Image (cartoon, rainbow, N blue to C red; front, top):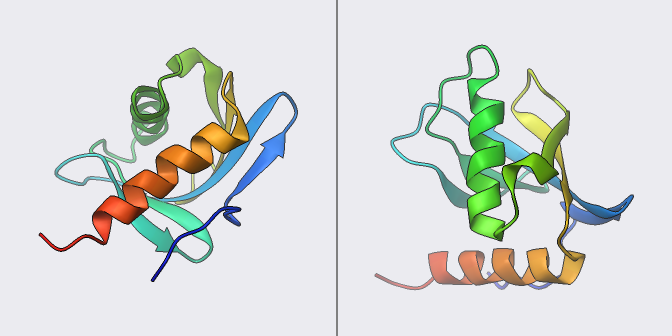
Length: 110
């Protein structure tokens, strides 16, 4: 499988980027898994209790995309696995590039 932008789970939104994700909480570590149901599938270490998974995905995405977690907000699906995440302070092409690198790396034989 080859990955090429534009990704259906990424779009320009207001003054930033909207990232559609499918979240799997309670993982051993937070990581991108691949693409699932036209969303970026991610595993998150946190529990899905009292917003812990939402806080962790914002923290983890901030680190991954090199933007402050204060510029990342779960705007849809706060209590569901399918989430819409709004990211300010980064261009769509930069997010595409980072995600494409991660997906390409995942498909390399180990």
